[in-house]
Length: 475
Image (cartoon, rainbow, N blue to C red; front, top):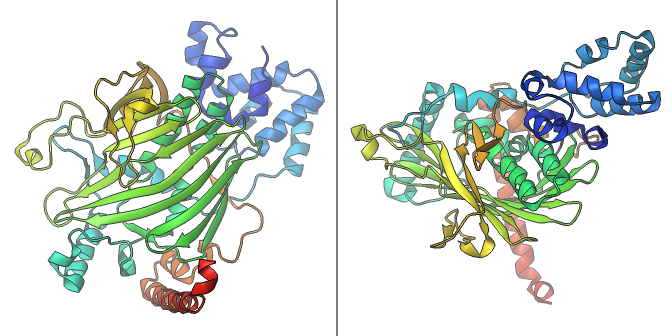
């Protein structure tokens, strides 16, 4: 077998489904495919390499690709039982020590499973985290006291200065980083796919696989103008800068080490209150571009938090996800909770046909979809016919025509690592965040207020400069 693609791109070891479907069909029997482990696969590859130089190259790739968490590397080496190979491995580990991990909040990975219950008589995931629920209630009471009931309905809440007791221990930029934890896995698989539909399927897996990482209900710290974030996630370097305050906008750029793909664009985040709910949307433009020039755009669904004042606290994705393949005029249109019963019916124990985390859709011609830039509601035209059927649950799996491609248990998230020199403008250096991570709310609130006052002064100076230099701006 030619293992060259796998050797050059070791991230595909993160997905056993890909290996067993595309890499090993001729090497193992059907029974062996069911029981073979990733360790056995790697061992087979190493012994197939003919020279020590190739073996060194392969081991180096593993050490530099952050695989020690996901694969029993030591067990593979022990299988050789050769002194010279043990010595070789020792030398490589000394010259390529694993990087120190920082700022990787692994506990967020379990929130959707630990804090929520999925019931067929609710149109969202039922939250059981009493601490988080209490924070939301305190926040709503604070809002009503500050603004009044009529004023908070239909109003964007992200530009309101909240007390820190509501906050998560991350900034919005760090939340975005965390949501990209699967990018190097599934976008690498997409880059290696030569068939247009196959590549689109892996891009869809990338989109769906990040949704369960975003279910925390407390608010991240708003970034300030010029605040940056830079991080390495697996084989991808990611850079973010906050560029606009109203609406909250950050630009981002991520690139894979071997230039297999890049992600770039800007995100606009907004959250609007209702009488008993909050609707959050992430708009803007999110592009994915591969090294052969093929370009995709990714549009994430909206999030609905219900029961902010009374009733069950429910969380779910609503409306649609779109993934557009511009080169081939294709589009994946995915509807979330397609069999929704409605919030009030849920009080009377009506059951849904499917669980609330279900999604359903297909791959269509781009001309079959009406795309909205203002919200997350993208309409599928009548009589549109899909090339591929898509269905699954965003907390567990995705299937294309009944063939499973992504399962939440198939992989572990890639860690976040420092990417060399960190700019002084990076959000991790914020004093309010550093105090809050230490559970010092009093000093965190003081530092937050200092930053907000600084932002107001900067905004005033910008406005004055624009007034004085109108002629220059209009040239």
